[in-house]
Image (tube, rainbow, N blue to C red; front, side, top):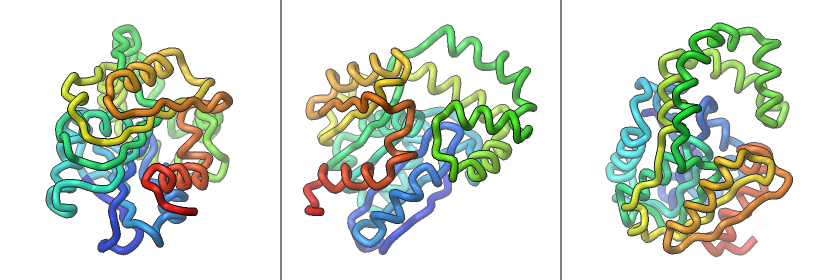
Length: 249
């Protein structure tokens, strides 16, 4: 796994895990805002553009990042945030390690398996994968994700680099992921965010995560689509992190 880092290594560490099909630039603006206060670490998830390993599983990605934290951070960090697939990996990390971080920010993460969607992924991508290199098609896909326009070139460049096998693998893993009972022992103070315009699956997952985690708060942005909080509102996202950990603004 590869890592992008911002800020001085001696500062307290924040790890942010990007969404599926995206890359470290998901949190680039947030990292730029916070780099003078914290050491920001942006892993590039396996199977994504810039990674050095095919995607295997959510559990394996979680274990890899925990191993990095053990090697470079003494076994724990101040805060971990994650969007969508990154949010699922964060949930898995909290399940695997009780004292991994003091705070966690989970955004738009599915925690209820969807068998039908999972079964349709391979045939759907088998027939449409070739279109991702078509700029017109990519722009339509990009617009459907409600990501700010300035990120299109990043999105198009990196989407074209994702292998079909990896794309199918991480999407199947995402639609099959279920919250582990062991997460209830996590010591982290967790905030769970989702958009009011997201799917019912994400809304129900957010409620489940909020009910399952012992020290959590649930927040809904009524007018947001999937992933809009961290991708499109970096300043608000950074300010939320500051408030979570008690930093005066």
